[in-house]
Image (cartoon, rainbow over all chains, first blue to last red; front, top):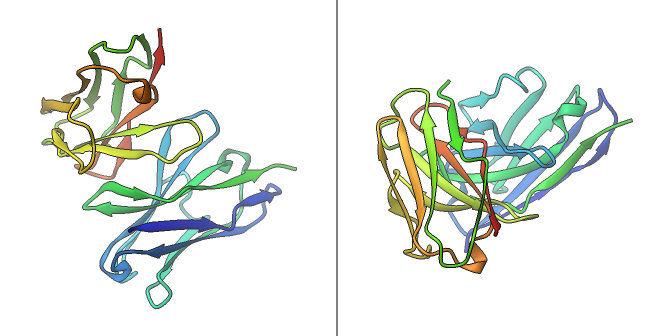
Length: 117
Length: 106
């Protein structure tokens, strides 16, 4: 059974940093690109970032480019999202997502990041 | 980027109704379209991909159609567990989601 479990969310002040983790199991993690999708409270889904299976290629939405860094450790089956210079508009539930090509077949339960003073 | 416009943004329907949700892409996406269902407090769930292919385990009352820029999700007979928000997503280029359609009980 595929499982994706996010952790690391919480309350952070504007300008602060946070690192999200996603522990994966039930599939060959190192064979799949992985993604982060976020959802602001009461809003729709926003595609945030992606990383190739070997970590050699990454993508960032314009809204987070230069502030967020995606990475992975295939030996630990873990995906990361390092977030810095956080803004109020980064407040959202962040989902770790596995994809088949670029549609998303498995989602984690999400972790809430709240940016507020 | 290819933008997705979903309509309506909300609808009210009764159990047993046939429900149709539409998604329009800003340019052709060659059936590279997925549909998701999201219930409050839960992660989205994949329903269909490639515009019309049903994900394993999804009830057959859900179907998808379309081509080019215009796509449709149909629920043939709405069930109580189908009241949720539905999102389309194109993956022809950088993934982008539609704004969502909330299906509420009439």
